[in-house]
Length: 174
Image (cartoon, rainbow, N blue to C red; front, side):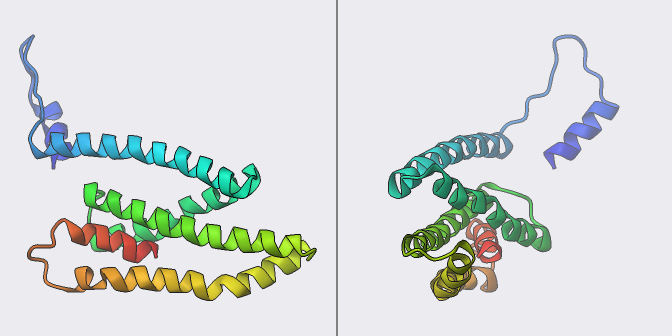
C-alpha cells in the first residue's frame, strides 16, 4: 500500500520548497526489521561458510553445501506467490528456517559423498550410491518440517497472522 501511495503522491501532489513526506509507523518498523534481518542473514552466511570449512577442511565442499541454499528459495517463493502474500518479516524468518533445513541436508549428503570417495569409489558411483543412501534421511527432515508447520497453514487464521506467512515459506521450501 505504501508503494501505491507513494506512486499516487508523486503523480498528483506537488509540495512547496522545504516540505516533504515521511513514512512511519508499521511501514518504518518493517523496513528496519527487514534491513536488520538481511544484515544478520549475510553474517550468518559467512559464519556458516566458516563452520562448514572447519568441518570439511575443504572450501570446495563448503561451497557445494552453500550453492544448494538458493535452490531452497524456490519453493518458498512459489508458496508466497500462490498464497498471494507479500514478503514480510515472518516470511523472511521462514526463509531462515528453510536455509537451515537445506544446509543440514547438504551437510548430510556432502559428508557421505566424502566418506564414499575416501573408500576409493568413482565419482559417478559416489553420487549415485550416496544419493540413494541419504535420500530417506533428507526426506524425513523435510517431512518433519512440513508436518510441523501444517497446523499453522490449515488451522484458523485468528491468532496466527504472524506465524502463517512463515509456515507457508517453510512448507513450500521443505
